[in-house]
Length: 148
Image 1: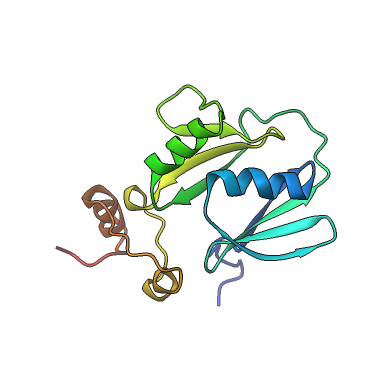
Image 2 (image 1 turned 135 degrees about the vertical axis):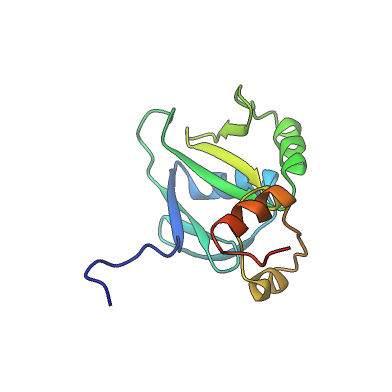
């Protein structure tokens, strides 16, 4: 064992929002998710082996640098959902938006990034998604994907 622990992953991230019911309605208008649970002032959106916690009580100004990067199975479907809901997409090369409470959210597509869910987690989520060659190349460069 080393003297310092190694970072392994993220179990969850908590976003501060105003009202939990309003936040659930907003995020449900854009994304498909299962509600993992609720407690006083919190709701938990299931993402397989991870979750997003929504916590009531946001008071700070909108974020401009601090942000959350969400991974989706279909980035273009996310763009269409945001447009349908009238949520402005921020300028730039990515798919970034502010939620109604000022949380900056960056959306990326699962096929295009290194982040990888275990096959059994994807199956449990009912997803069949292949990585792009560029993402596989990045994983191979780190010894995290089979050669070929």
